[in-house]
Amino acid sequence: MTRIALDAMGGDYAPKEIVRGARDAAHELGVQIILVGDRDKIQRELDGDDVGGLISIVHASEVVGMDEHPVSAIRKKKDSSIVVATQLVKEGAADAVVSAGSTGAQMASSLLILGRIAGVDRPAISTLLPTAGGVVALLDVGANVDCRPQHLKQFAVMGSLYAEKILGLPNPKVGLLNIGAEETKGNELTLAAYNLLKETNINFIGNIEGRDLFLGTGDVVVCDGFVGNVVLKSAEGLAMSILGMFQQELGRLEDILGRERIMHIMGGFKRRMDYAEYGGAPLLGVDGVSVISHGSSRARAIKNAVRVAKETVEQGLVQAIKVSLEKEIVKGGDW
Image (cartoon, rainbow, N blue to C red; front, side):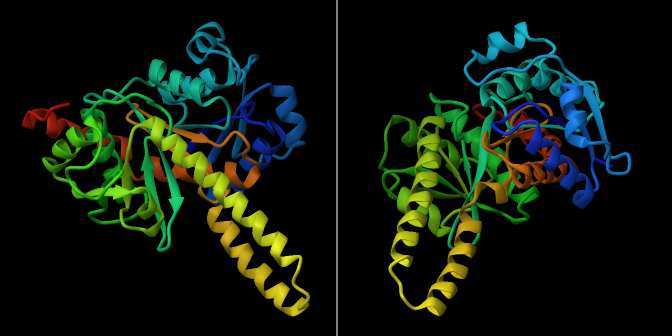
């Protein structure tokens, strides 16, 4: 049974929503949850329900705040919930760590405690975005604001394996986010990265423009973390704006039956655009499973983040990345 160390103190709605999400995950996914944080606060939220012994608590007396410098905070706060949860993975007491707390702190603890996979210069955050035909994995979305061409190559290899192992897509299509589809378009980074990506064994389909990102042109799209984070936040804002405008127009509709039908359609659209449906984003490239959840995650998002962690563990994604990069290193690839 997969064991998930869940940072109970991380996120805007911790520990209440984290504990609720843990209960739901234990019930529905059949995983063991180790809630890490203030024992008394967690116990009050659990109210004696350990879901048939599937939930346990490991006490941690400190919390890393969102406004704290990540590296300094985890070095000073050795007993913080994110450090203790990550250490459980390192020691083999848990198979994965999930947190909705400080992304920087989770990245720092994953790097310092779990370490990088050999051949990975920069771990990347991969997130799923809805498309017309399903989802697209976009990486990096914030871990690395400045990248070199070989970093994008590594992102592409890891992203391709993620799409294959977790999304179940054989030979996933990998694209490079750019300002034009032509091979000659882009800045120094994308021009050089394009040439490196052509040399890999992945299914590289070339450049993808921003307008094609949500049309399902590619299964995996790579970019530097600065661009990826702007795309992610812009998509979130656009979705909320469209829903808001739709609701305004709906309020002017006098046909009650028609309004109910449209509201039903809107509900489906909202679910497809809701980050809670996707749960969390794995930090690809660290030597262990570390899943980053949205800071505003409530119970459903936490449950789905645990699901992502479970699938990542069971599909052996970390080992698959290791094997793939070892082949590239032996082959003499430019890493």
